[in-house]
Length: 397
Image (cartoon, rainbow, N blue to C red; front, side, top):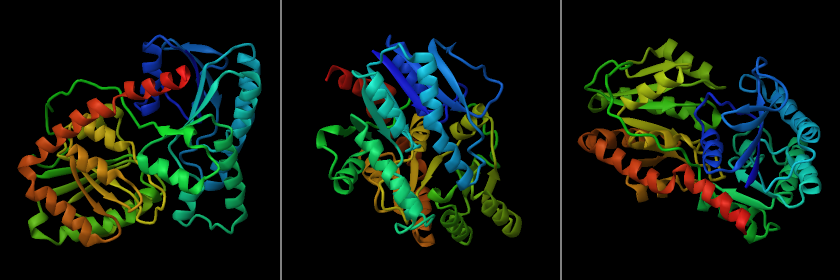
């Protein structure tokens, strides 16, 4: 197959589900082309070869530390830039699959161009973010807002201009069927988040932790409103008041819009069961996680859309059990139950969080078994070959 991937952000140095996906496509002998957004101004312009993948970097301002207005302007600029790259660099090419994730939802003009110039290509949406409804859930704007209606129109065009829509879970599929009834059922299919499998190694040290006797819970990644950081901190505060939970320590590693809240919590309350670091180098983070006893997942209780955070795959990859604090819309609890890889509780109540942590203490001697079950489940259902199989089936029809 000749596959074109379109990403608003991509980095060959960072371990992500998308890097694993493009590498697996390459390793199977497919011709892979990549248009990738980056804020690294030192990267070369034009078409270059990176790891055997034809790549063009689309230079963008930094989105991670940008405010919502600036981020919106950056994303609105992406379609025009992508079309220019396609016209200048790949006007005479042909593609069999054109694959792209959300975010952003602003790619409809690019897909319209692709439909005209790459007539036989299947436009494959990897649906990871249901926007603007997730922003409504988090109170960023209301459904009566002009901003909502603007983005809602874009979202519909994105769906209409996609030939296939791959959803992260069955709950995602049902949500789209219910809220987007104009989409034909044959467009929708299961397309899970997946990762490349790496050999499982035994931790070599307890580096980064205060004591090997504690139950070490790691929460790594974005620290934003979708993760309900305020709710997590309330739960951790409640745990510190229970003597039976004194052996549980929480390690937060990451950055985001809620970082100031975490810093204020540490500064004002000086918790003895909590450590926060803005960032670690990838190998340092993976070493820390390898020595942890449990990985933490958190979703805002306000969500009405079924999210499925990919960070759970990092925990399963390293055979770490999962404690998930989740909303009622997601079906992640069904996965955790089926895989037997941990425990889930509903978000929104510190006492419920405490009950989840108490589960960890009660099952302390079994945590490695839960983690290994998660690893085996990942190997079977969430290895990156599953995603490439789906793209190949889409091509074969």
